[in-house]
Length: 82
Image (cartoon, rainbow, N blue to C red):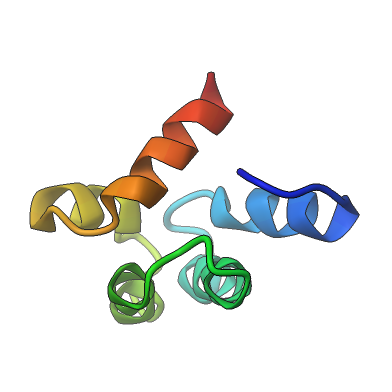
């Protein structure tokens, strides 16, 4: 995750809302929109989060990987998790 600030940390935490939790897909999508507006997430990757938004149990990261979309974003997430 690039940038700093409490808002970015909060949005990053929302990206990690547990799968299957009610409304979790929408929370992840809202956070993805935040990072898209900052130029950190591509429009194509945001579309994956949008599609997954109504499916609380669907992992947008797995979809991004399977579709080979958002490679720069995935790399950024990997860095943040290390």
